[in-house]
Image 1 (cartoon, rainbow, N blue to C red):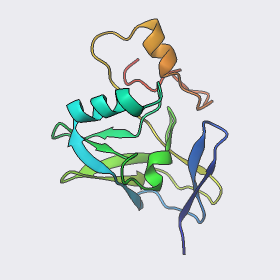
Image 2: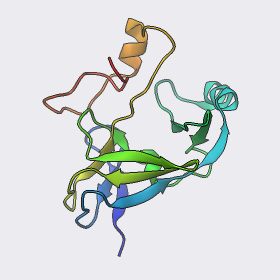
Image 3: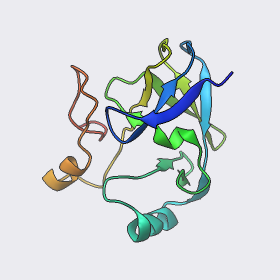
Length: 145
């Protein structure tokens, strides 16, 4: 039985939704795509990307998974400041795991925890504004902001 589906999200664009109950600690899916250097990913993003919209997932080894190239449903996960899922990296692979119980019909969220070089400008903050609507929303998808 399928566990998730991608459909229109009330938060932003498309989102990933539970089709059946998911339990805290359950691995839901892998974040897939083409693994490449950050330099190449940024170059491709500048050529083809939409401002403030990316499917890049940074790895601890300095590489990045580009979900727009060979990626799966995980690329449609939206950000939330108080997320019900988290990304778990294991040997260069990234898995999405539930951190709380999730009911059918609920949207799955991760905290993007994005970083920028230096202190983010007002324009950068606006580009990465959060739309999660949670009462504890920090207003940005940037980490530590």
